[in-house]
Image (cartoon, rainbow, N blue to C red; front, side, top):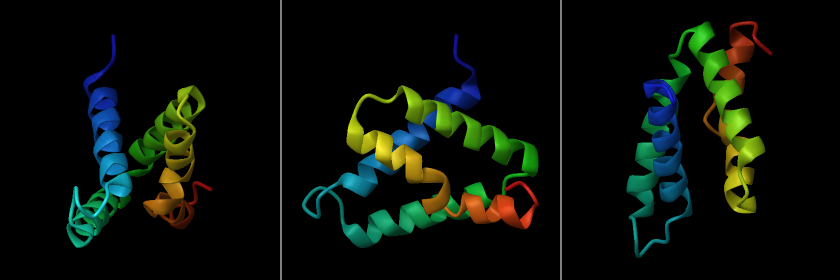
Length: 93
């Protein structure tokens, strides 16, 4: 059974991926960027333990992903959402 946190993280990633890959006819690109930036800003405020947990979960999701495009998105997620710099500034990387 999955934890609430893992289920919510999976859905957050689903939404981020959908916004990132949506065409302009599906989602206004300015709106998508705004939502993705708000999401990144929120995640960058995680404490050290939660940030490490998120990074580990995303790495695990990437290893188990069969879709190449989504696997690439997951592989880039931490860096693209500014979480690698957040961890570096906290001495994690």
